[in-house]
Length: 368
Ligand code: SF4
Image 1 (cartoon, protein in one colour):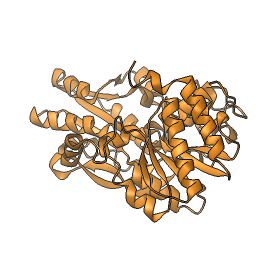
Image 2 (cartoon, rainbow, N blue to C red):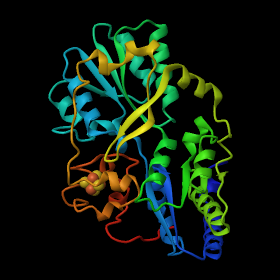
Image 3 (cartoon, rainbow, N blue to C red):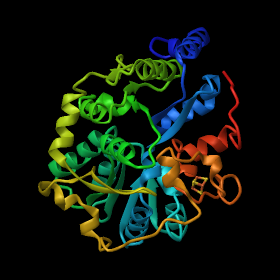
């Protein structure tokens, strides 16, 4: 298959691993931003193939993981309103709020449903004019165009019974927050290819310059990731710092202009709270004034809800690359996929779920 098989090729993997070993002379720490990349690294044991001098740490690019607990509580409160249908993607239903998750709310008899597209939520609103459909819109820039299109479509159809609970977050401010933190140890980033497919990579140029940090836009297959690491090591070893595009088969410098336009039409940038990390300035999207009618937080009385993360969960440290999942005292004991304490153990992109699923209880093991 073109564009897939060649990026899973064992010989290509071996050649890249050899090149990375040959190029590495000093210790380096590289963060992959996206949870999809984390799962690929852990699943294929790519980190175990690298020289011991290279440390890969896992970033905050799992949208379910970074959604703060208070937004889960708000979704739960909205779902409990009469005549509400609350819809979201599957993973969100199992993320624990302060007292319960949305799956429990569903079991209690409230109408909570899984959708595969935000436009399905609009269809649901059209089909249920006597109910109010709330779409719990989580995601990075990748999912923002589809969510924006759902709002535009509801507006076109003048659907009064549709709104979104927005939990949109943005990658560049998160990189900024990590690099400006006194506890930062990341020296290069693998940026998330799918985010850059939408947004391009011009936003990363000033970040790379300001912090003298290589940023390599990288895909999700083993060869993609190893090419991204090789590019990052090449820059680190030579003292270069620039933005490189490894994922050129999908990413253009300017991104997807029509997708960016629909985001720009519907959303504006706002400060956003990240799970375990806190508020990062200008790191999320909220609805523009012209679409404020579709804001579930103001249509339901939930704006005042606040919540605290469970103290045992170190998701904030895991999401900033400060700790690895198996360094959490609860990992594999109190916290498992069946009984998760934090979102990174629930999400299909969460680092804790990757470590549990692929048996990373202490050390790495190569599987390629
Ligand atoms: S293992 Fe569980 S409790 Fe620990 S950081 Fe991960 S999600 Fe939180």
